[in-house]
Length: 66
Image (tube, rainbow, N blue to C red):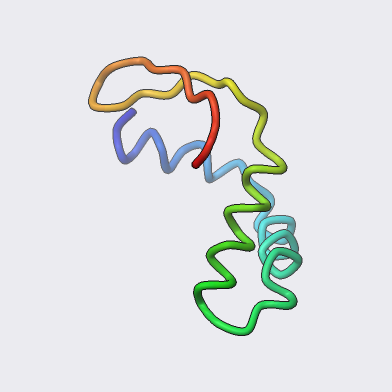
């Protein structure tokens, strides 16, 4: 997926919902490190694995997060 192709999927996102999700993820965070952890937790909770992705031109299956 090219940079322009990756930008296309974000164009369909509701920016207000994205902002609300971000605020929910970081509401109790005291610093940038905690915000990072909060965002990763939100993503892990919301993303359904596995899903296909393109890495360096190769199709892969994303099976989880570490």
